[in-house]
Length: 383
Ligand code: FES
Ligand SMILES: [Fe+2]
View 1 (tube, helix red, strand yellow):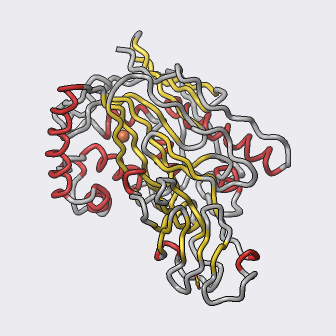
View 2 (cartoon, rainbow, N blue to C red; view 1 turned 120 degrees about the horizontal axis):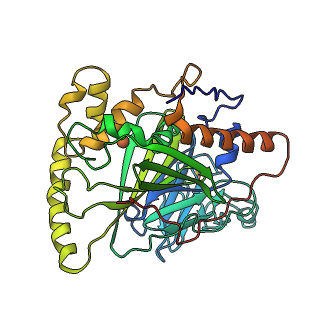
């Protein structure tokens, strides 16, 4: 193989997504997953932090989920402390009530007529595949859903994982098929794809199509703009193969620049009796996982040298392995000294796409119109 080394240093900081940053402005042009639907019961309100900004998210009595500003416009109380009333929310501090569109409709201790002059920020909020998505950009949001549902039959399950590092190094890891042969060799979770693949990548209308070729077998994976990967993965470690290989969407939502949350949407190909036995096995696995403690805490011990990488023992071993190498790159990976090669082709292409779009945005030129992928463009394993 000839030597290829590529320099992808860019003038843009692709990692930082706070308000006012170039990447933050770009990311706010897309729907962003913010919480699992199952974590937001009717009548509950919760605080969320997305791209270095705080918000409140509540679910009205009709079932509608709504993202609003974190603080009340009166004197700044946290809105998630309030009462959900119908599809409205009332601030806990002095009882100002807001309808889900943000208009203030009641101020018990104030003069009539004041309420109609007051609004709280309210953000378009929708649900898809068991996740709550919100739109934080200017103007009308792009089409919803941002990506199609899986076509195959089965059970949709959502998992979520807090990860103590910048979102982009996690997203880039999801484009890095070579790491599987090394990081996940211990424990044998990914046997079947340990041969080193030849990586290919091409830009599409919705993001990037990535291929991993092993002999004449091709693994096809999808990357939806701006932060979601759809791929076929091995059975979850800890489930002893029950449920088989699965289709998975992995979305990386920045909490702030040094932490992110993974939203992992699995399609497990089980129906009928197979589904029942899968659910039974999964309940045992979830119990084991709860006993073992959070994956990110064990990953921290590995990063700090208190546990050897080779000795990671956890029902979510794969996740601990991934977090250890990704968060181990640092809270925000330093890309200035990287030495990228042929196997980094997909990461290089993605950075080039982002750089092109950010430059257009900075120069006031039109950006590419990303469209949701057609339902029949799906990831495959190829064998
Ligand atoms: S701070 Fe919310 S009503 Fe006063
Ligand atoms: Fe991995």
